[in-house]
Length: 220
Image 1 (cartoon, rainbow, N blue to C red):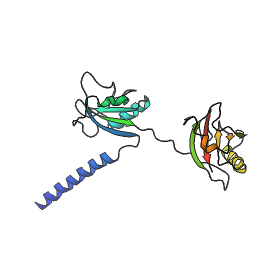
Image 2: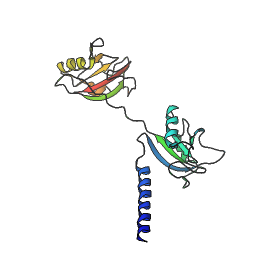
Image 3: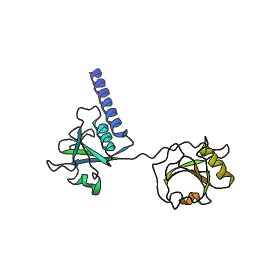
Image 4: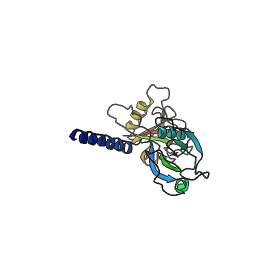
């Protein structure tokens, strides 16, 4: 009797741990929005895949939606994948109200778990700077003809380490930071830290050396 009770208790513990791990270890590139009702045939979003036989249907659905550039996705019936470019527009996924028919994050019959795709912040590239001139990486930022940092102080594209060369020159001139664009063009001004965000973030930088009309910015 005691053995049976202990066994049952252990099984209960395993179940609790399993459920806890499922709910707390959600991937950082998706945000659960809840369980919502759907109707047929007036689906809220078009079906883009069926992953009911997939080991990880939520992950598979998210990856497919990401490939298509959609901002979110929904999983119904334990693996049917829905998404569109306007899935999150005006909270359309909430049109038919909440539902309690979802299970395990995979939706249910005429019910879906909705998710928002979270874009991860770009990882800071390590700055290789001159000894004694430690720099903080501030990201990749767009530029235009009317420069966000209107002070080109050098061009080191032909040098093996343009980031270091630019940092040395900016440090020598007493500037609080510097920017590298298009593989080695070097920009810096007295007010660089107030103006570098003028045109917003960019995704055109490569290897910490900026890109076409894009600055990798560093602060001393």
